[in-house]
Length: 106
Length: 120
Image (cartoon, rainbow over all chains, first blue to last red; front, side, top):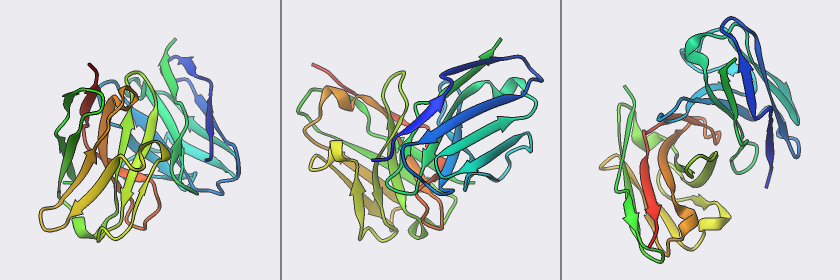
């Protein structure tokens, strides 16, 4: 099983700030890494796949980078609607998710 | 518009059974793998099961093998999860999710989920 570890657990930011979220895999997953956003009471929604490709309709302020075991999700200028929990997921093997990073208001 | 609507959740006693269903619309259902993903209260996401486009291949997370069965009905555009020998730790919101068309095991559309509570 590939274990995904996200940091930090909580990130407190102000609107307009840049947010950087990290995800580490216990073994290489190549670029088979996705990011999801989940707002309270809602299902997750796909943001990024292939480590860096934005899903349809995702604004350009969201970007992903990395390969192998180290990955980053960057939100360049945080908007009010971006406060949520973000999960990374590897799909190089049977799917596994990180424990999530909550982005909340500073 | 892609829609996935789950049903069938509720309160069940330990050792009991429940069947979840997911009705799909807005896409060519027979062309897609489908999955179930769960989320325990206040916790993260856990993949539960996958099924191939024609139902010929199925995969499960180890913790549910031998207890859960995923099935797919392309005539009715639905996917189901039969859950037997339920345990307290199976308590979660269960999401039906569409696997990306190229078969990569990531999930490009999700239903709103159905809650299963296992408790005496």
